[in-house]
Each structure stands twice: as structure tokens, then as C-alpha cells.
Image (cartoon, rainbow, N blue to C red; front, side, top):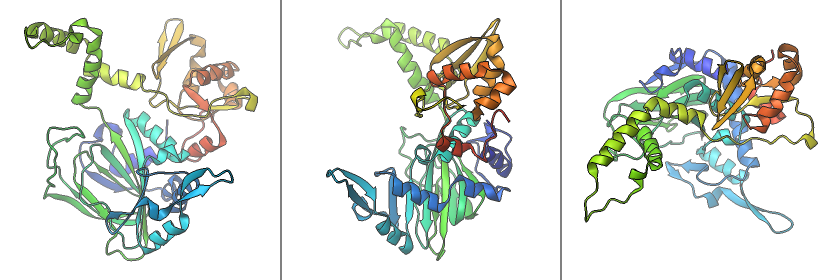
Length: 398
């Protein structure tokens, strides 16, 4: 899936793929000024807050470095039947923003199709799970204090400017669940300065950082942080622990009175490690990830005229003699080899208008699309979802 954001980030950071992700701090600037406003604007973020029933911690407001209690900027919308739904009080929120505040929307990809598609494109690019948080700061407002993240982040400044400080790690590759709390910040400042509209920054896991508009006066800042959680050796061992339950020896109690058979367990563990390598884990992680949410296809609502592949990671398409196997999301589908051109088109991650696709790969593309939608590897390309691709990802049939 060729997404404008990925090519812009690679150019800005001097990357030629995802191999440099997590290896070192780097920053740069995108040379496409139209891209930042296409991704998200402050008003679009506020529109999401207005139209959704958001709750803490998904949506939060901070002033003077402290979190504002939700009761201050939330209200209950009561229906004529007396049903109460918590909604953001936009007037109260507006007052906070005029005074200077920071709004945080976690997992903006859940609520906005453009952010959803951007995260999916990044996942296909780096083969790891990605989510995006949006941060809107107004006037002379502080940000989070010095902290570190347990995942790599790519930060894109979409509007205005913000002051940043990035420090080195005080513990190499720290984890969320770790043997050390990692509470002491490093004294080594790697970079400090302003991020301006269009700037991009990559902060690897464990690097201490903070951002603020304190002292900047009137103005705004909107940036999005793409959090990329990479698999670790600990992830592999946790996966092995799940597989060990297949073997009876690991399901037996450890008997303290008679002593457990330590040698037998050790040998069984060695066999398990040899049978399931880290590479096997990474492959299984990609191919068995649960399917994402999508709008179901209902023929009573209209014909299937456009689809897009929405799996978390690129489906594996393998030729096997006279058949083709498609493996994704814990499923394996088998087709005849003459379906290969249509399958590559439908599983490209790009929008596929079926009318145009039939002219390119044949009429069987419509039948194949119905199968892939039924198996949930592809989804109906609703107008709202299509908006997430428009101007960012080229149609597959183009």
C-alpha cells in the first residue's frame, strides 16, 4: 500500500524502509505542505470530540500541567425518554482552550477514517501494531512532564509549533512490564528546539522527552504521535508459554513434597524453543492477528461495488501448483491460479472499485470480492472509509 504519509516520513527522516525504526533519534521536515492539513486539523479534532461520546482516558484535557476533572468539560445529553449520554460540553471546552490547554485524543484511528488508514498503512510498512494519539495545545499551555514511552514513536507536527526536549535513555530498551521501574531521567539532552508545521521526529523506545508551549504566547500546536509497539524477546517467550500447554509435561503440577522432574521439564523446554523460533513467532503474529472492525456487507442495503483489504498486516499470497493460498487473520483460503491477478488487486490494501477492476483483471473479480468480504479480509468501501484514502492512497484499478 503506497501511502503519501509513509513516503513523506521516509524522505524527511532519510529512511528507505522501516529498518531504521527504533535505532536512533532523528528528525526532519516533510516537503509536502498539503499533506499535513489533509491528515488532521484542529477543527476536525474538535468536531470528533463534539460528535462522539468520548470518555476518559480516551479524551482528556490538561491545564497548567494538571488533568482537568471530566466533570468540568463534560455534560449529559438527555433524550426525550430520559436516556443520558455523556458528551463533551463544547462551550466549557472552548473556554479552557482560550485560556490555554492541551487536549489529548487517544487512538484517533478508532474515530477518524484518515487516521485509521494511516495506521493501517504504517502497519503494512513496518509489520507491527500502530495506533495514533492526537494532541492539541493552545496558547501558553504546558505539556506532559519529562517521561519515556515503552514503544517507538513517529511524531508529525500538523499545525503550529511546539517546544521539545529529547534525552537519551537511562535504561536500554525498557519495557512496560520490567524488572526495573526506570524512574530516573537521563541528564544527556540529545536535542531541544521547536517542531514547526510539517516537521517529523522519531523517538525510540525509552528516550526521555517532553513538549510544551509554555512561554510561547498566543498560538496553537497540533501533532499526532504514531505509537509503534515492536515485538521483543520477552514477547516470544510469552508466546512459547502459551504453546507449552499443548504438552502434558507442562500441565502437571510442580510437586514440592516429592520434587519436580526438573531435567524432564528442561529438556521439554529446549525442544519447544527449537521447534518454534523467533521468526515463527513473528510470522504467526502477523498471520493470526484478529480482524479489525468494519461495516458488514448487507446485500439488502445495495450491491457490492467497491472494496478494500482491511487486515492488520498484508495477507500472504502463495502460489502452490494449480492453486493459490491466501493466509491472513488466522484463515487460509484456497483459490485456483487463474484468480491470482484479481487476488493481488483485491488484497493490495488500496481501494478497488469493482467496475474498473473487472476491466483490468476480468469479471471474476466481483465473485472473488464477495468471498473476501464474507471472510472479512476485505471490507465494503463506504463513502466514509473511502474518504480515509482519498488523495493519500491511489485506487488499485487506476
